[in-house]
Each structure stands twice: as structure tokens, then as C-alpha cells.
Image (cartoon, rainbow, N blue to C red):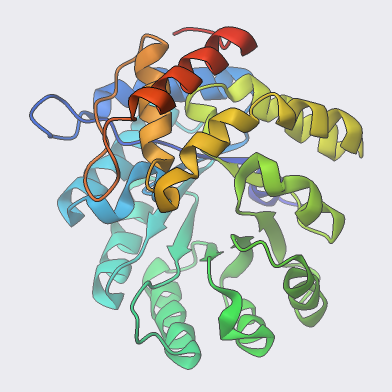
Length: 300
């Protein structure tokens, strides 16, 4: 297993995009988060993921953020660069991310309401061509495309794996069975869903918690890696309130919860852009503050 493949079976930490008071990106504020994540043992970091508000950024901002993440990481652990939107945007950002120093690309599944399974396959083929040999991780949030299409996607040259972000465990098991054993399957629904996805063959998981409490994410991964589901469940229970807050308002408080926690912990990275909710409601903030106090989440 290559160093990159090994990292992909670890924690994929999705970095937030900081903003200043004028709603401009503030890449320098990401540095402290990167340092803390690397020190805790996070295996790979992701620029331009959903926790990074990829769809809330202009293309120029997305380019700056992948360059910034690469500078902060400085080759110490692998960097995954998120690409997506129109096929031309995705191909352009693939080239930019490679030039910036990304070790692999995460291809967002197109949210286009008229996205056909065979159209998605062609989309990925074009991104793979633009990536010029850089490995691809598919970020699959809708498994309705079917197992056959998933198998075709995984057979595209350059595709190294899939971040599986649906709670359909049986469909994941089918997809794993239908594809080459070399494909890496990563739990794409963060810590809470990691145990059931591990049970059918996924390894590693995505995490927005790493921006706030990377040590807990690393402890959960270590427990799952040694097959200690009881310990993993106990650790997950301790951060469940945080994930519940993020899942409210149709998941519209996902980034909101992370940025509110960062502010409460002494590292204000600004707001979440619309259409995400901002700020948390008074009741949500009270629950978040209680979580931070009760769990003794370390401050910055």
C-alpha cells in the first residue's frame, strides 16, 4: 500500500474556509487548524470540501484555498484538493490543484438536477484527463446512480477510491463487491457513521470535527482500526451533540456548528456564508457551549 493509499484509509480532515469581517476569505487563519490537526495525527487534509463551503466560494477563492492549504501543510501529510461544479470548472481546478501541490483530487458528485449516471461517468473521465495522472477520490453523495454506474466510475483510469457519503450500508457492500479490490472505500459521513460503514468494508472516514477537536477524531479512528467497536462507540457518544447540532435545519448548520465552536474555543474563523445558517440560534449555541465545557474540548 502506498503512502497516499494508507493516508486515505485514515482520517480525511475537511478544512474550513475562514472569512474576515468583510466576508473575504482569510487563508492565514487556516494555519492554526492545520498545525493542530497534524500534531494530533490526522492522516490527510482536504481543501475545497463541503465543510470548506466549496459551493459558497468563487472559483478564484477555491484556487486560493487549495494553494493556501498546500502552503500550510508543506508536504508533511497528503493534501486532497476538491474539484467540481461545471465540467470545465472541475477540469480547471484539477490542473490548479495539481500545480498547487495536491497529492490527489476529490471529485464532488455534480448536484445538477439533470445529472445522468452516464453523464457523470463522462464528467469523471474528463477530470481524470485534466488531472494528468493525479489519483482521484470520488465523493459519492447519491447512490441512486446504481451499482453498475458506480462500478464503471471505479474502472476509470486514475480513480483510486470512493468517499461513500450515503447511509445505505447494503448498497455500499454491493458496490465493494462489484469493483476491483484495489479501490479504497472511505466512510464519507464522518465519525458517527464510521462503525457501520467499517462493518461492510469501508476504512477511514471524513471529518469536520478535526477543525475543532482532532484528538477525538484520531482516537475514534485508532479504536476502529484495532476493531474495538465498543471503545469507538463510547468516543463517538461523547461528540454526538456536536454532530446533532450540525445536522439541524436540513444540515444547514453543518459548517455553522464548526465555525461557532472555533469561535468559542478562541480561534474565530468568521461566519458561514448563505445559504448556510448563521449564527446558531440561542438554544443551539447553549447546547454547543455545554458540549465544549462538559467534554473539555481543548482551546486554541
